[in-house]
Image 1 (cartoon, rainbow, N blue to C red):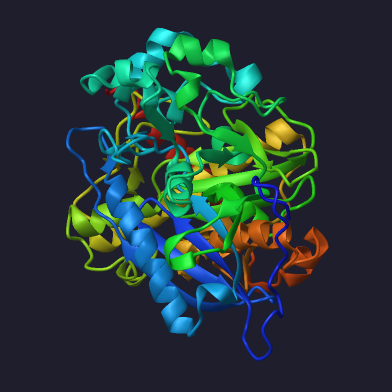
Image 2: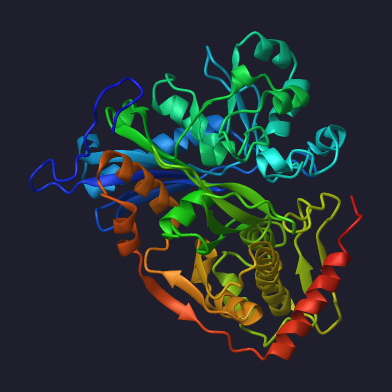
Length: 509
């Protein structure tokens, strides 16, 4: 690997006799920050995790404290190394993966954010998006609809609403980026402002063909391009860390869903995975050809390896799945821990006629309806806590089917099985219902930490810790497979009622 400074960096695999060499992955997600250490067989050697605060100052607003996230990142790296009994010298490379569209603007001189980070779920930029024109105005160049989901309008909102921010940005005093850029900037001692192509492809500001910023779109959005990071490949020598990982090459960056796709070894066109986390994200590798969706999906960069053509993907983004379980726990007190949702749902045989449509931030793919709001429909006196728990789990599976049907229509190829990962895949009831409602097998890998693993793979490839993508493919193995067991007539009847429930959430906000 050659770093931006022109120095040659070799991978450290096997450098010290008797010391296990690892690749570190810093996984900064919507609710927590984690560090995982992987060995050459892609096994987790050690890990550490800490949650950060979720702020909801107004309806539709979701914020994070960027300084808290940076502090947590340092903490989990330190703890993971300590648990493994390793030092920075034992780390071959660091990969970063992150919640993607969340926007941070900070002062280049002081390093202080000018405001809380605006999270990807936040909907406050709807007026900005509406003023920019029709939803598909930028789709041909960026692969994305004009929606509150994406980073560019969030940056514009901060410049318009934080006193003095716009003039400071125009004077070159402010930097902007997604969480990966913020972490990279801090990890390198405030020396490097860069991002990778997968994260840049989520901003509404990057051209999918050139992998460069689009000056016309940035001007229309009133985002100075000088604020934005350099765009580089996902597997690439970014530079060296300082601090707790002093001297370790930072050699991989991927947005979390692209990282999970890479970690699932979906490396050939037609291979797909679905991540069950705060939201759900289904990505289908389309190879080096971008496919523009006609059915409400996103076209995005899947990954970009140094010196190779970028690989693209179709994506179905669902805003609320795991966070619905959190809402039942934290807002309603229906359960005391996320794991209890399955136990409670198993106390009943079905949803009792109740459906939960969790449109807390509007509906994402394939609807793209920011006017939608959450609803629980079909209630009778018969419905109890167990039915609501089951309906919440089923909402995840129904939303996934909507995305799968759109993906089948866009690709022209019907999905024959679905690789799954993320925190919710330990829920056997959900996985079985997912297989039932899709009518195809659902497959969970042995290494469920695919998001962190994908970032580790990107970094490890860049320094030679792993030799090739074929080695990555050989590391993948199935842990469990769920086969569909529901009759087709019942499957279609349940789904039809779900679609009816969705219509009740529209035109609300």
